[in-house]
Image 1 (cartoon, rainbow, N blue to C red):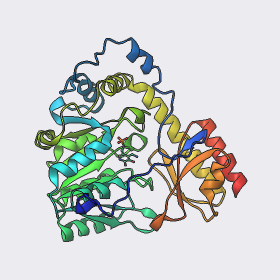
Image 2 (image 1 turned 180 degrees about the vertical axis):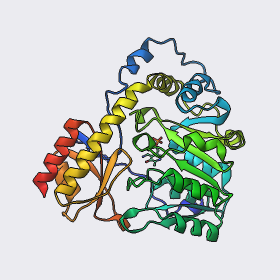
Image 3 (image 1 turned 30 degrees about the horizontal axis):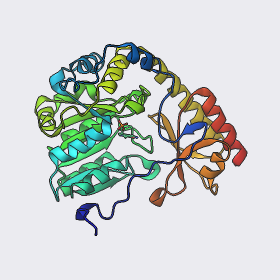
Image 4 (image 1 turned 45 degrees about the vertical axis):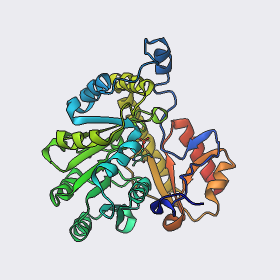
Length: 343
Ligand code: PMP
């Protein structure tokens, strides 16, 4: 007997690639050593496990404040930005209302929409996956969305909307815009300094990418107090565990490490991009910690796996497209070596 609610019947469970390779460049993760020493610090700390976490996450929000410059009343934290994006849909979108995003973009947005029986529209990108701002504004006017999710830089394409372009979209509508800046540390077009200038803008951030802390699952939203208060009504208490809150707080205290790391990744990203272009591959300029490219090589992913390198392969409308995360210098060299051998 199928007891599922109607809206999820056509969904499949999200399956992550279980393949194990020594060079893992499939999920836009960071450097395993960047904050590894915090595990030891955690072990030596006086953190308590019997009590629930401090649900105001005051220490963590203090450090987020030091990083982005906003007060705790303008911040909510969660179990990865994934939970927060889900919370945005739960908080602001009812059944049959519309969520508008980009196409292609991060696949989870449409899944969150479907789970809550919302309509989902992906605004088509132009040639070369460039996002066309005027056509998004037109789509917004025609479809009257309740929530607009903009991923900037966009996953999986790496394309970047300039601040000017995002401002134009935000000003064109009263609808709420969730700006997913998961990768923005690797780009230069963050709207974080202006988030309070608009009453319809929230910014979603994470420590999974630039801070290389995907394993602890910590994300946060920055927005005006009204938006945060609405989300806080829906957020489950203690949604972020004490261990993750502790590690994220310490990592934010030592954010200079992250800045150095980002600098290196940007240099490495250019090397990968140039090497792929040099090899005749159609690669796309990226503002994130990955490079998106097209290849006609049969079974490219499998051939690279045989050389102990894992990258992300897309299917459906994006059949023939791939995404490689920018890793350490050594990992990137191994990827490029393996790539040269298979072409
Ligand atoms: N947004 C984007 C654009 C992503 O690519 C990802 C993860 N790949 C997330 C949000 C979720 O990140 P996390 O839950 O680890 O913060």
